[in-house]
Amino acid sequence: MEILRQLRWQDLVDVILMTVIVYRLLLIIKGTKAAHMLMGLGVLLVASLLSGYFEIYTVDWLIQSFWAQIVIAIIILFQPEIRRALAQMGETQLFRTLTSAEELKSLEEIVRATIALANRKIGAIVAIERDTSLKDFVEIGTPLDAKVSKEVLLSVFHPTSPIHDGAVVIKGNRIVAAGCFLPITMSPDISRALGTRHRAALGLSEETDAVVLIVSEETGIVSMAINGKLETHLDMGTLREMLTDLFTSKGKKG
Image 1: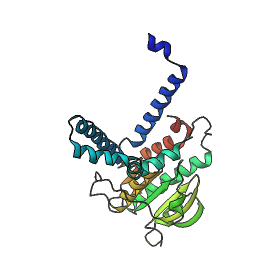
Image 2: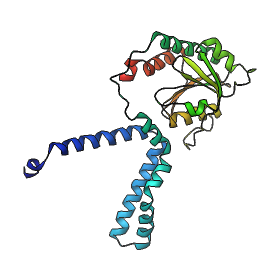
Image 3: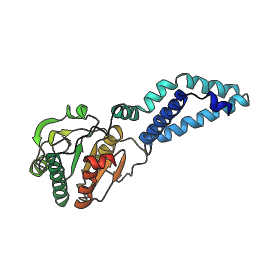
Image 4: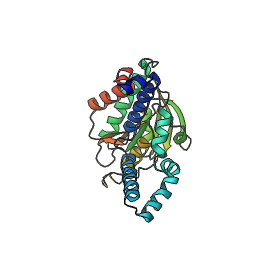
């Protein structure tokens, strides 16, 4: 009871804020390589405590030397996750407006183009921007600034197109660039059967919150990369439903 009497309202706010921050950080790193690295840091912490307790001085000195550089190590190890967390700071659901009819039409055009490419077994990769800007990847591509349409996407990815090998970046209802190069994932958990397109899509989804669609040139299978995870074997109905949930206000709130 004495502890409760000494408890201030500021202490409650402090605990709640820290709980929210830790929870958000865990959500960001969940399912990523950062989660494994975090477990490794936990092992080092336990080793540090044990080496001090049992007076294993050399091991303790090595670990303490590492902890002295822990801030730099965290920045290097968790660079993609830190970038994503900073991009999401200040994000609020209260002021989002309903997705416009034009944007819904753009999503439908993307779905139709993706399925058409899959039926023809034409390889493609389409990155759709959400909250995190894809400006850095747009700058190294070929600027287009074209309205999203099935015809334009089919033209870009046609084998005779000089920019068919790169990725298309879409922002809102505009195709802002094509022939863009995306970062390749370095995760050791990725299947060796996946090609460069799938690895590039996963790489971008690890560093940003973008939704990346992939059409396999070999099989015509449609896949989606988001938050470092890959959903495969998507048909038209499933693809339409997933994109609608991700880009409409209803889906974002859910």
